[in-house]
Image (cartoon, rainbow, N blue to C red; front, side, top):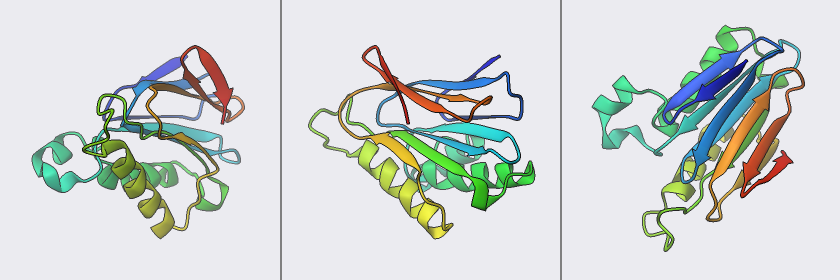
Length: 158
């Protein structure tokens, strides 16, 4: 079954038949976490780097902001039986799609905040497809733990 992750959203699964997908990763960042031992995986699609710009929105949509979403996502994975030492982490997005001159640097800032949070939690990124000016679709296949990125009609495995 396909589970679609919208903007400012998170989905998880422990079913081998599921595929978790998010579309239109531009300046947003998508993150997949997968624990092959526990058979648990998930994905977030974060729009903005820091929740302090809108605390009310951060409460209403905890996966909108990277600084709130990533710790909550990690905790949810751990609560469902994942172990930090087993996590396979893949990242996509962080592009400058609408902001071609990269004036606001939203994509770069999203990616920087993500890296900082993972680093503070002693977690390394296993693979990534970030930056540039293209939109991406990201998919996590629960039967294998494989993550793919599709952009401009070309799909690659991370």
